Image (cartoon, rainbow, N blue to C red; front, side):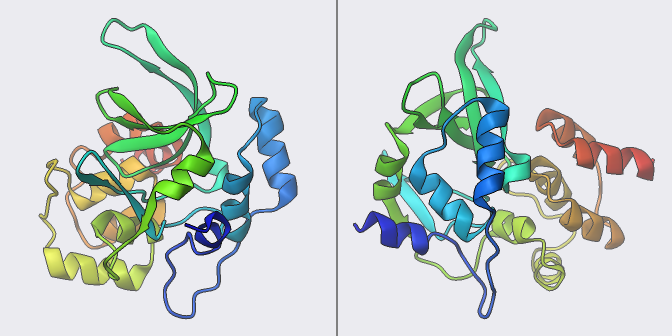
Length: 225
């Protein structure tokens, strides 16, 4: 696989959509903020688009791992992963995205960061030993229409309205999560606002926002109450 070609074609786009990347200055500011060095290929894909939906997936251990959405720079943060005994098993994880139930990030406990995929219970696996290896593992998505999480992450009002019309106000995914809960989990505030306007149930939304440290969602919910 041509790694540079994959980077340039990394993002899912609608017909006619123009991507807007971050700047080199913004990347440098983030590196200074967290005292780390971002992988060159990660910086390349962020220069093309400052976050969004990956048009690739990873097939690992006989299953597909979805990579939607990738955070914009302002949402990147460093966290820890602890085990059931509250002991740190990863001290510096730069979280670069999540799908509402699991997250993926760069493990800076290593000199060269590995790529980690972790579920909501704290269990994690190493997807790749470095970001270049991660890029080489990617496979093009075989479908055109994005799934529910991707539609919510895109925050397009027309697509969101069609989604609610298609699945219904009381739809839940295989994890038992409603559309507003998913929006809260991934920090999609515009999507959540539309769901509120459409009269969807907000039960559990605040819990998902708090669990995923979505301060802007918490603030929005407090203002509603």
